[in-house]
Image (tube, rainbow, N blue to C red; front, side, top):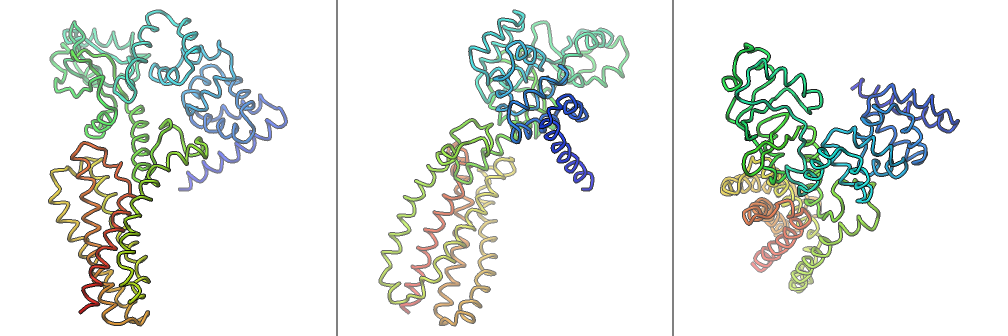
Length: 464
């Protein structure tokens, strides 16, 4: 913890020093101070400088960085900050940066650039690489093809260890990773994998065929990125080969790229579960969206829920005679509705998370139902006992009223747990993303169920 605090304190002090140096126009001293940090930290500092001192100062510092450092820093910037830099530097500088980036980073930045600028950059790119870039740019978004890089090491199965090591020395410099080598035949079909450690520790005359593993986990170029993410989590690989429909090796996906996908998917699920429908670029953060964009993303579910709450109003109006004759019932409506909504959203969140991690399957609905029934019953009993003491002893209501409220509490807790746990499983069964069953929706349904239970029980008890 102390190390974390020291790093945060150092970062804040450095940012303050940089802003002072920029204000005094001591740009080279500011540059030298930046170079004491790694590219990821420099990118963070540049982003903060842009917020505090403006984009112009950020561009000045960026241009003063050594070329090799500027490329690494550029790769660490957010897409929005990358575009800000590109809009300010010359086309020649942009071409240099793009051409020096790793291939997968290059594809990412080209996808964000205006078409006319991409065309001009590609005109200055060697024909062989230009064809490869165009191929990658044409893969649909959110697929394995759009995530992969062609910068990998492959060896032929009939090569010897000596031949393979020579090949790795010649071509491994530009590869994303050399720790895993992919084995192919003469037609570029993926036939196996072999680790660099296995190659190095084997006799130089040994054939790759004799030391490779043939049980290869690979991804199709058209596979959804969420499926790829699931496979990375399942197998724990640092890289995954990507093949076309004919099992030809076309690229690899590395774990650093899939971590970005995991973050995006988690963000999307959290937004959906809380009733936010993201109509904008999923890579944009909270601070990057305008007030109008935030309002537009949140409005659909709120409109839907306003219609759902009409049902709640109808239930209350339908029981207005009972409420007028026993006005105390109104006092406990917020308590019971809040309990039902919270219980439902708790169960829904846990089941949706279980579905996302493959811990829960739709076929497990009976196990989930049985578990949530028992959880609901246990919680309901505890909450009922606590609230009985409140209603009867503190509020000094009648025994009948206390039993009505606490009986409703028990039933509502159990029913809300069932609603919250079963709804995501039903939605998943019909092949819809369970995260779309937003918590506000579960809460609203549970609220309506709570009122129905409460009034039905009140009518039965109070008429006895």
